[in-house]
Length: 242
Ligand SMILES: NC(=O)c1ccc[n+]([C@@H]2O[C@H](COP(=O)([O-])OP(=O)(O)OC[C@H]3O[C@@H](n4cnc5c(N)ncnc54)[C@H](O)[C@@H]3O)[C@@H](O)[C@H]2O)c1
Image 1 (cartoon, rainbow, N blue to C red):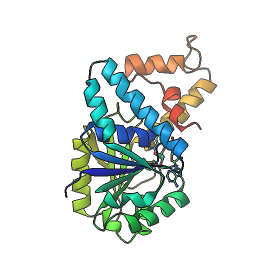
Image 2: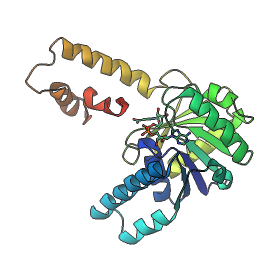
Image 3: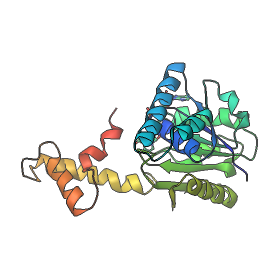
């Protein structure tokens, strides 16, 4: 399955990051959102991300220009007829994702893969609203996408082996480390993360850890120095606050 053009639905925190790593990996990207303002915001985030890499001398200014020339934006989902692979990263609402997948199913050529970056909605249910459940899969990127290596790859009940293999392969081409996960609430990463954040809130409520670290400061130092994780649980849950 040849993949040249990736469609990304949603130009928010995750969609902009997914579009950025895709153009950095040599793909053409069609980025979709509901308004020009949302698309402009997403594009600005990508431009800033690439600018930082230029400043750090990880890429050349000419590379940045070439990458940005591979990005087109649209508010019209019917432009996705040219896409070889789609990653949906719109707001986390089941009704919205169902509507989007019905539209994607009509627009994107048959046989092409429709992936969702959902954190918590069952892949099997999203796949069921399409006429191609065998081509629907979960592709759960971590935040911030340009920095985090892990992608959980989640098969729905009807996802084909070919779809799974192509998604694993694409994840590697994006420079990521794909890990299979079951279609179970929270998959693996969030199933572990959420109880940890809860427990951290209880520990904070009980006044532990102590040490004058301020909001989560003690937790963060435990993580940074004891678990080689720069973020404590309070910071880890920040992306989930709206
Ligand atoms: N933020 C995280 O840490 C994180 C991590 C992994 C997965 N996710 C998942 O990624 C998805 C996106 O999350 P986010 O944090 O980027 O949210 P976000 O709010 O930053 O972005 C969502 C974007 O979707 C757009 N959108 C809404 N309806 C749309 C529609 N009909 N068509 C096209 N675009 C539409 C919004 O305008 C917005 O720009 C969610 O499913 C979320 O669960 C988030």
